[in-house]
Length: 118
Image 1 (cartoon, one colour):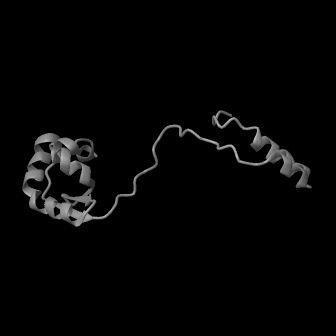
Image 2 (cartoon, helix red, strand yellow):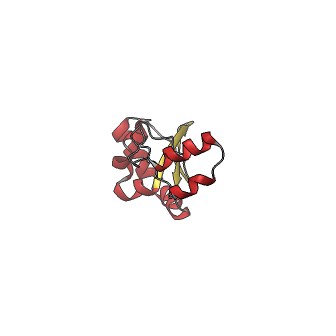
C-alpha cells in the first residue's frame, strides 16, 4: 500500500511511531493506534492527513479513522539466526541413562559449541 510506504512522511515522525495505516475500504483509511489518545489524535488530524495522502500518493481519501489496537505483523522475511544453548548437564549423570539413543542425544547436546552453525 502506497500510504503505508509513505506513512512517516504523511503522518510525521512522532505520529507514525504510534499509528499504522491498515486498510483503505470505500475511501476510508483505517489506522491502528497504540493508545486511545493517538486514535483520538488521528480523528483530529483527519483533514490534514487526507491532504497529505493526496499530495504524497495521489490517493483521494474521504476519511481517516483511528482505532486503538495492535496490528498483527507478518513474520520478518529473511533468515533468522538460530542460537542453541549448551545445556548444563554433568557428564557424570550420563551413567544413569539406560536408553542408548537418549544417551547419544544428550552427549551431542553436551558437545555443542553454542554457535548455532550446523
